[in-house]
Length: 157
Image (cartoon, rainbow, N blue to C red; front, side, top):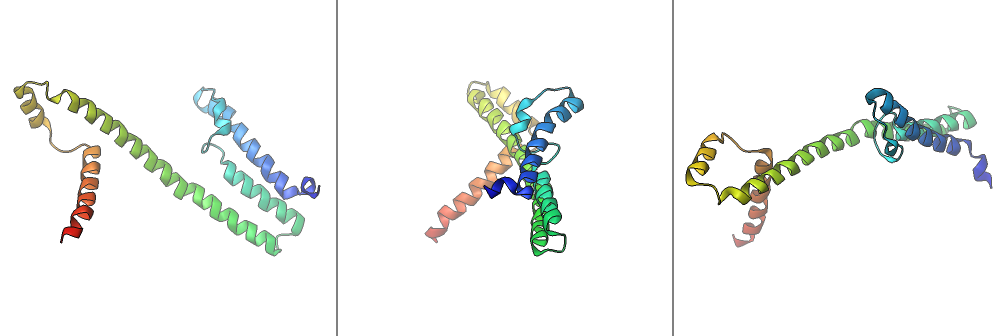
């Protein structure tokens, strides 16, 4: 049962739990919204990933010294994880925002397409005159269509 004496492990686990639970009052103070589900979600303030890796690295530094190879490995992996949390994961979240907007635009496009044939000819012409460009969803699916068609047609040549 030596696992119960593993200080770096327990420090990291405690840091994860604390960081997840503290998100609830921080969110409440910031927005006046009580969201207990934040304790089980990703993202938010503070980062439980960063808290965990910082805690385990600190625990290793305390137990083995900051000149040990184990501390060096832990420190490097902690830096990578924290960099990833602020870089790649953040960018993925921003891309998710854009994709969600594209889905909403696509659903709007579908609803408008359903009633297109029921509109009078002058209404169709009026709407066409007002369109100065494309919605992002239209551009996205147009590009995707072109890419797919190019791959389908390529074997014919």
